[in-house]
Image (cartoon, rainbow over all chains, first blue to last red; front, side, top):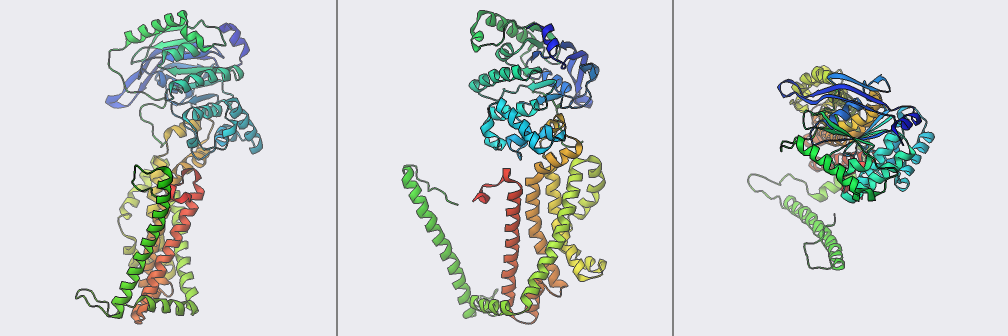
Length: 282
Length: 280
């Protein structure tokens, strides 16, 4: 499906970033995490942001979610300026942020509850979403009674129940073991077919980016700039076998050389979509 | 608590049988331990043991205390004493719960509230509640109110501090997620911050219950008309020595009972965070 066809099918979810710079920290410790980044993402597109650890890709995601303010440039979703967080722009973190005191179903029902939807209806919505991620049988479990993969599935269901225009994912499968990660990647693509939305997926895993994305935005080491935007040509639905193809190998080598060129050998501290220091007070 | 014996070679069935056995064995040891203490106490008071620096000459024995308990249970004053103490504790404690959690949420949540409220509270905090007794008597028109105030002071600081601690330690990512899911400030307070801080608040409630009993008993000994603390001190002045020990036992039981009740309520309120020993 071409990018033009995609935008015809989706009503919202277009991202326009123009000359975006983001500064983190304060005083002498302040630094530029993202520098003069411009890109456009079409509605319904699946874009991976690939870059080395600490390059500011999560910071950019946090700005899209509305948790981090940009210092320069403009950031628009469907021509609206990104102000604060909004259920239209759901975010999934590397480690789950499910409410430990709510069952899986009540976690998923949180968004509808905030919209004032009555109990029976929001439970129905939540059950529907849990079924979509294959967790109907675990609706009554508390988050800590679920495995890491299941927790992330509930997390995705909790975001998607709001039918967001953007699904923002910050290395969501980074903490999972290799096999679970692969299954989650396939599941995410299957879900995306049924609940179409624009996905911006941050990762440092080249295989993951190539398997999932329509396009890959490759970012440099800090301060994060765009090195190259790569079109991923594989047709959908994508079987895992494409990972063994020659084309895949070529693209992977290209990504690797890009990433290698930007690294000076010093790994940086991972940044979070909430900035460097996140404080409970406001 | 059943702890498996440290025997790596035993099969599973063996170790299970052993742990049952040792569980019984340990209960027997515990019972014997209590019995020995009671017997030693009985003997010491019966034979008026005098060790020079400590004397049991005037100490009533366990049987004396038992008879005193039976007599006390039959007297009409028993209900008045216990009910008075319980009313005072729960009145002071209830106010402390509302004030402590309310202020704790405000201080933990907002910097301005913290700047406004913390300095005076930090100045008052090191003063032990018992040191408030003389001033409390002067400040309140009735001794009843002054005693409720003392129990309040005793309970409010542990509750307050644990609430602040709990609120400050709520994972900021949870709050960020709630905002991304459409949570308003108010909703986040009720749906995220309060339950997130709940385990710590429950700890504060348990500590506060202990300190409020401690403060009440002291206050009752100094300025009471009724109450268990008053009863204990009155027994001393009236030389009903067996009643002193009875009063002590009752204080212990009431304190233990309210702590138990509180732990149960706390466990029911935070089912996702139940410490292991409360599950059984």
